[in-house]
Length: 95
Image (tube, rainbow, N blue to C red):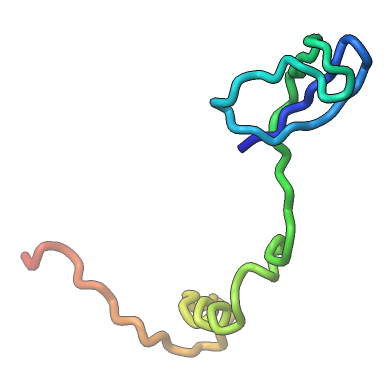
């Protein structure tokens, strides 16, 4: 449910109201009782980042990182180590 901003044109009282989108717009000011209340058009909801997990290093566990490193293809500077990967057969078997 969104939070709406209201202001009274009679007394100048401004406040926020947490209500459903389907609720009717409030017309009566809670301070002065006049029917001069109007709902303001807001910029929308803001994104709020709370808690951990918003840094590159916070996304994955250590076990995931180790597994990802093991899945990396060998680099050219691997010192001549052979890969365990088997070459794929080429073609459709015709020779």
